[in-house]
Length: 334
Image 1: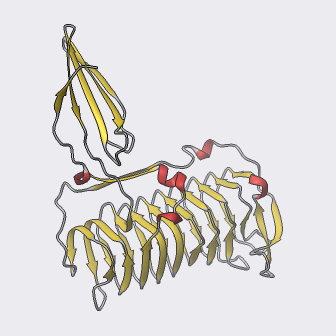
Image 2: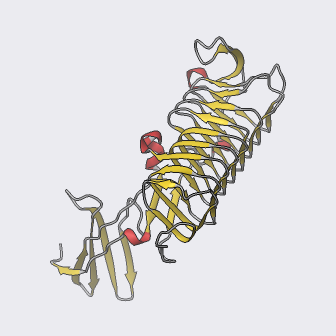
Image 3: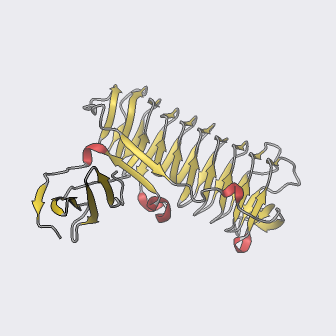
């Protein structure tokens, strides 16, 4: 099967067998070299194919299934993809500097795709089974953050790459509780994570922190996610109002809901739906498995520099119609 890194294939059939060797064609971009050698009773023949296989993630907005809605006018700088229909309810069509690919569009004058031209995606979790990972109990630290702000709060201590694990639901809801995390370590919650509205100030996830939640994430306060932050949830994630610094990554297996505005630099990926109630400014990419609904104004620009390389390496987005197989030809047996 075709992915970004196809593998060799060998099988036996009746009195014979075949071996298909797959390699990237030297000096060619996105072109592969397949040599399939079949052997029956010590007689071998070989055929070759050099297909061009393209894979891209260059979409500002994507919906892999379901319908999508754009409620107000906005600006989108790059391509838009939806496997369902896109409904535009603003006073005028959005300004889109790119192509719109959708199976069924309304109020958008673009040629729809055929039913076979479906984008597929495979995204591997940064930690395959983080619930089984080990870590220390939370400890807290008083610190001024951001530096020079004059704001000092109590945070979960993730300095020096600490791995902190809570083996149950974790709720931060009292004035004496920490306001977020500080440091570039990892917080693992084997249960739901909640930042309640009883917190004294907005919460902060410090630069470089990784937050893995084996459950839902509920953030009832406005918050800031620092540069290089990765947040992974096996359930749903709901935010009141949030801002993401450079290269912030949300990976959500359920639905993502933002009740107010979202100002974000990075990648938003949810296997379910993505709903933003307020205005959204996004530099990076938004990918929803089951449709996106932008209820406010929007200014979206695709920027792969805002997506960490290791996330891109684990992400496969491809379109079936982008494969150009060519013709099989017989070649000498190697």
